[in-house]
Length: 234
Ligand code: 5RP
Image 1 (cartoon, rainbow, N blue to C red):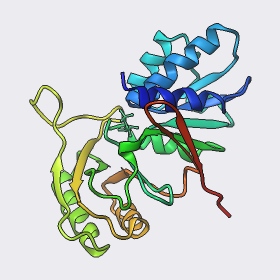
Image 2 (tube, protein in one colour):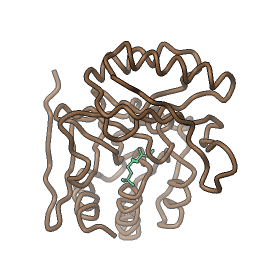
Image 3 (cartoon, helix red, strand yellow):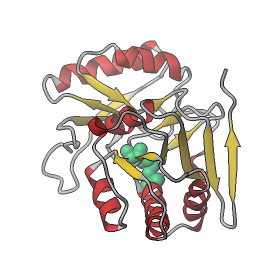
């Protein structure tokens, strides 16, 4: 286990208060957070979690974190999630774990989103990590072409798209919501807001992995401590 991710996850616990409904992100860093949250719950902390993936739900159950369905809550106080890239204004690429649609629904519904990462995720510009786009299987070839055009129009030089395959290598990966993932090798996304806007206009796109203006706190785990970065939004 990476000590940097562990330190980020531990620092996020300080933001959790008794009685909170938490959005539970997906990925390895979010799972480390769940292990420590489980210890707090065993010690008497009362929280309930809305999972963003089947894998996160299983991990929460293993660690004794009570779960609640998203349709049963009127408010999510705080979401803790990982990210694949974080830029200087806290725009994110997410979806490396193929959970981006549910992660965005939960983040968007939350009063606050805190992102936990190690330093390798901090970048000057988004785009080195392939941008995941969750799409409906119907018309996927057409949708992928429209994604390519949207990337080009928003200044991405050569946004090569590939359909993500499952780990058995016998077909496309299917997300928890029954969709496919198109990964876009962008190298540089010069105008993330414009790219996000154009991708959202494509009917076959369920959601894209650009998370803009959603997070105001990034916790960066380092080998021996965690650094908390905060952005004041108007
Ligand atoms: C899953 C995600 C994850 O948060 C992202 O891939 C980071 O994962 P990790 O903490 O394992 O590096 O977006 O869809």
